[in-house]
Length: 289
Image (cartoon, rainbow, N blue to C red; front, side, top):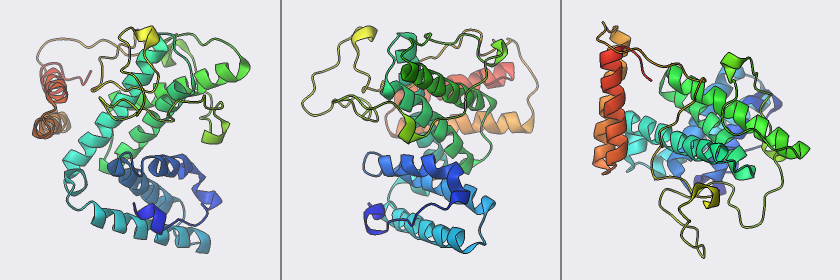
């Protein structure tokens, strides 16, 4: 991929806010170039808003723009690059898969570096979704919860303590998330454990198929689609009954339907059904979750 031939200069201190998004792009260079592209696009847009005039920042941005152009050329036949709706659905579904994987392991009492990094990477990808516009309140809650959980589990592992599984108060219980950790601060990786879960339905070379019981499922396997996530008291229940929708809510429902159509083009029926159900819920209740 382009990064190998076009290395970026050292990251200016002013751009520290996007260092982990750029690291995520590098980690996904071969695994998922679409994720790498949008992580870099988000980083460029965010960095430009911070400083586009000083010499070191401008020099970095020029190199990053060049790299994005090279990637765009290499991926020109990829729908997720040429079609914004498909691209948004790709990033969102990937983020939700990571989130669901981490949440399921957390609730099952499986605590390790892979779970920490999956939560944290999901939170970064929720950031990246801002390149497509304002993200929904539901995804904002996912981002806050994922960032809090990654920091909490990481801190417990560092102290040798056993984390409490699942939500235990969340924002409504007065629990504030510690500052996000850096990648260099994560616990040492255990031998044989991937930094990121492999793509859906893929078992690492030389590995056996994962067992079916949650407690025994390896932490480097991601479910093929987002599982239903219940936050207990973290998310509020929705009301039922017909409502009058605003133009913005109508647009959101329309976008969910387009996501469903995009998913069907890839024969991803579960994702299509999930988005259609979200659209129907929004149209009948006025709420997204």
